[in-house]
Image (cartoon, rainbow, N blue to C red; front, side):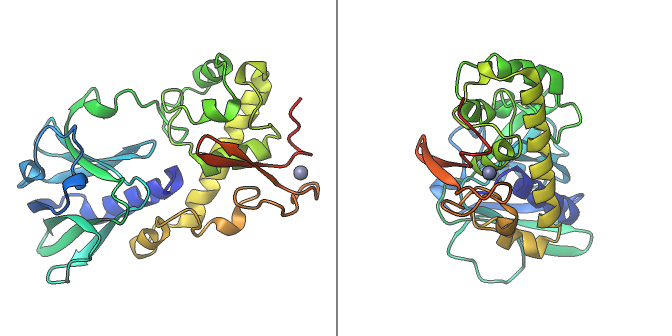
Length: 279
Ligand SMILES: [Zn+2]
């Protein structure tokens, strides 16, 4: 599943290819490609020009020149955007296709999604963010991310710290992989209660979150050709730099103890029992 750094890589690629481009035709090719919350069919954005591509957490949106209309996108488990030449055969996983014109060049922007958990949505902007995602909190890459407030909000949570980290109304963009990596780096057990942690511990955890995500973003690069193959799954390009995620029974690089995997909702948590004691 693409996490924030991958989505940011996608955003950079989209921004580079599409800023100023005009959408000539918009075609929905699968019933689930359009979110049920969409306020209009995709055709509504035909004739619009894309002025920029923005992101909060894992949500992307295309800012259009026909305000307040906006196109929101979520990659879900396997969503990918691809730039394709006009005349290129449609991929079997293509769920929506836009014919766009930028300068004299015409091409297709295709939304591929094998597992169909991703979606597109026509929405309206309100106070600088699409209405339907206004409840999503700022992510650590956001200029206006309020670190102090997030520390307080996390500390007030009467849940396990990992669950609190994943709460998109406190802070967005942290998914399963980076939560595990950041907790390892900050030496915090994923099941420790958030309210039992000190402010310093939470502050160091937030620093770790930002650090692991920045590193992944750097590794992802910004080449569009690379990035769409890279947002394909959890075992992507940054796999080699993961310390605990997916490394059950391997040695912790810090202490040599074996990495453990425990159940977390319908997924898993990975941690080092030595570096991240429960007490
Ligand atoms: Zn360890």
